[in-house]
Structure formats: structure tokens, C-alpha cells
Image 1 (cartoon, rainbow, N blue to C red):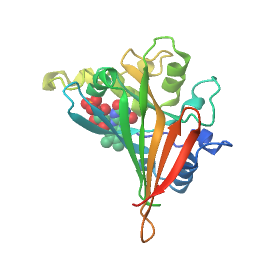
Image 2: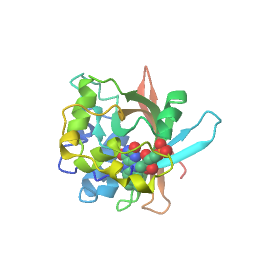
Image 3: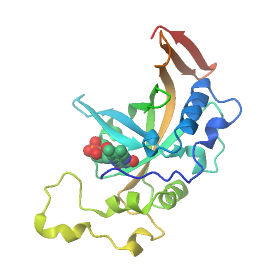
Image 4: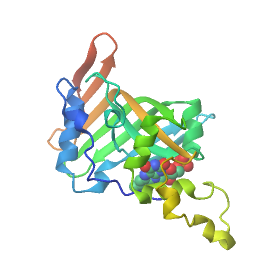
Length: 219
Ligand SMILES: Cc1cc2nc3c(=O)[nH]c(=O)nc-3n(C[C@H](O)[C@H](O)[C@H](O)COP(=O)(O)O)c2cc1C
């Protein structure tokens, strides 16, 4: 699947403005607001490992907070981001065997990097309302890849028409089987602010009893 144009018009990431959210979530919201006109501000790198322990890294669009897709109430302490991917992709299999990930999100203009550690859960349930809402909220450009031939298989130059997907199919109510919603449940954040001399760095860690703790560390 190629680069995907995020839909900046959607009200996303509103949960990050809620009362009581951790300081790092407020900092991400400030960065998103400063870079709202730039679709690239929602690209982040997702790191996984495979069953041999080898690392894999790729860009993904961070599409919003889970609360935008589900009516289940969440605590302001629990910040979950959602992304989408293809069930036929390598990362899907890597996440099945090792759901712990790191996501690196850099905002170029404010010059701030967030390294989010957490656990990814995957929703591929055919009648899941969350998955359906995610499907309805992504762009046609993002939908098309889910109908393409299987990723990583040798491309057949004589069968390019297999990449042609009908509009009706894409706008159908139900997402194709390949469509998976990834939810990142964040448990630790390493926030580096490049502005300033010296730079500033904060480690935010979540404790199940005490909630979020922030520690300023040397950059
Ligand atoms: C800017 C950008 C945004 C992307 N967004 C997504 C995305 O939201 N979901 C996705 O599955 N792949 C996305 N991709 C493609 C992935 O980076 C990757 O090439 C693809 O998912 C296959 O990865 P895998 O083989 O590690 O599973 C994006 C690529 C770029 C360059």
C-alpha cells in the first residue's frame, strides 16, 4: 500500500484536549494544532519485531484517538491511538507474535519527537462497529489498497487490471476482510524537544495504581 492521504477535515485527536490527560498528550495536541495544515504531521514510524527478533520499521498514518470510533467510555489516563493496516501485510503477522511496539512521531516545525511505547490490539472482527466506523471515516484513496492483490507477491505485469477497483466496491458498507484497525495503547512516552540549548527531554511512564509520572531527564 502506498502513501495514504489523511483526512484532515475529520475532527480527530479531540480526546487529547480532555481534562486530566497526561502532559505528553497535551504536548502532542499542541504539535498537531501547530502542524494541522501538513498531512505529514500524522505520519509516524511503527517498529515491530518478527519471530526471529529482527526489527521492522515503516510509516503509518496515526488517524486519531480510539474514542472517536467507539462509544465505550475511556479514562483520560488511557490514551489509545488508531491506525489501519492490511491483514495480509508482514506487520500484521509480526504484531500477532509480538504486540509490544514503539512508535516514533516527529513534528518537524515545532521540532518535537515523541517515542510512544505500548501494546497494539487488532480489530478484524467482521461486524465490529469500531472497524466499520474506521472504514467509513477513511478516504477512498486509503480504501483502494485493501482490494489490491496480496502485498509482497511478485507483480504480474500482464494482470495490471487486478489493481482496478470499482467505486461501488469501495463505497460498500462493509470493509473487506483485509482491513484491520490497529489500536495503540500507550504506556510510556519519551518526549524530546529539540528547541533550546540544551534540549529538553521528559520520560512519562504509566503506573496502574499511580497513573502517569513525568520525569525530566538529560537529553
Ligand atoms: C507516508 C506513508 C504513510 C503510510 N500509511 C500507511 C498506513 O496508514 N497503513 C499501512 O498499512 N501502511 C501505510 N503505509 C505503507 C507502509 O509504510 C508499508 O510500506 C506497508 O504497510 C507494508 O508494511 P509491512 O510490510 O511492514 O507490513 C504508508 C507509507 C507511507 C510512506
